[in-house]
Length: 280
Image (cartoon, rainbow, N blue to C red):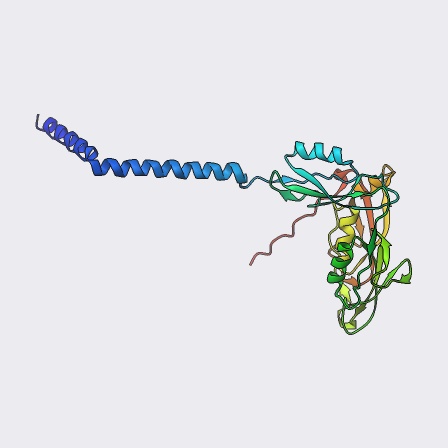
């Protein structure tokens, strides 16, 4: 009997506490805060798609309508931002894109496309003499031109541009050239710092591989293509599955070249083994 009276008293006290107006207000506010926090978290995940990335498809060689269709399938957008003229490529087909194929982006991202024009566009040759290789490359590409062969000669400053040329002849700043014309650079190299390392090019397209080689003061050497690569568009879509010399070897001289082997079969590209961590 005594225990029963104690239980009833506790229940009555419990009801009195939660029935008090102050406690009711506190609980009500807590409930509101919980709803607001949950709503904000849900909205953040919905609108930013936090943690969800997709790989950018390869639009190289496609027409713009084809690229738009593929972009919609991947919940992306495409935007034609510029054009170049490549004689061996179909007019209107996509020559280059940014971000590059395989890049991780959020849904809704705009992919900027450079298409092949019907006729060549005239662009102005910039002056890159005295620039570093990196600065010169940026200026040349920004002008709608391409970096060609890198030649090195003894000088106190490594990777300082000494001369610029087109088709074997010096080209002055202000000269009108067809867009996508190739500009060769002569650079200085100090005898004490004339070596570089070969970058990993496996899985890259021709343009990406060329950029990586130039960034490392090297040139594209002989290119070997699989037999099923028959058109220029095929060559742009192909990826590197072998390179000579390979990475991990001894340093090579700046201005050297790397032989590249291309395929349309991505399964043919070997997977690099991650280096083992050394135990302490």
